[in-house]
Length: 292
Image (cartoon, rainbow, N blue to C red):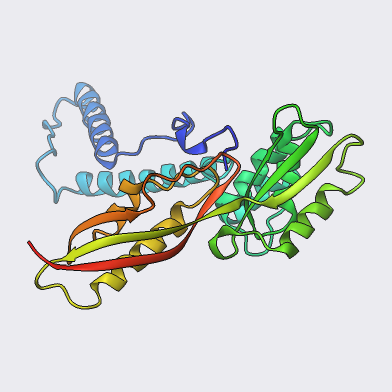
């Protein structure tokens, strides 16, 4: 689900220091040599002191030790600075940051989902809109809601709410849709003129079929592993508006031991509207033989 803000695209904040142990060592060594030369002007009997090549020299050992301590201190300062930034916060640090916006972590909720809810809470502050307010309400209603799209069709006054679920194939169950509807129609949420149509975002189930050729030394379980690899990959990629492209899903079948894949169904890419998600149904492989 898009929240209009991609935290991963933000530049590294200036408050985060670039750390380099070698730079610190070199700086401290130069400072030591400068101080030594200043002392030699006062005490001419002091010899020239160049410790740059003497790893066993006490001055070098102390410098390296103190430089490493400084590096650890700077790293800890960086960590503390990151903990106050939404893009970098995680765990209990993120919990503390989120609660400032009246957003508390739900049982079992991931950091990524919690960050999404924080952004939606900020974007949807107005009780009279925008749509991010209703998105926030839906995401807050149940941990099973992975993402949601809120939209109107043309000039229709109805507000469509497409729910993408963590349940099998992303299909929102009747129970989950009921929970979402109850949350949206709460008297403290629903505006007087708003009417909702709540439905599962997964409305298209695509059955796949393909011809497969194996390498001569591939074992008999290769086809099954290829199908599993595809299913696992789609479980990660499947989301609202994600097209099922032939080149993408055939490439996921090209595991070790597979020589060639030719898609036979569907005949073309399956395009998903922004408010819908695609589920993969049956996967039918046709073993055509072995070849190099």
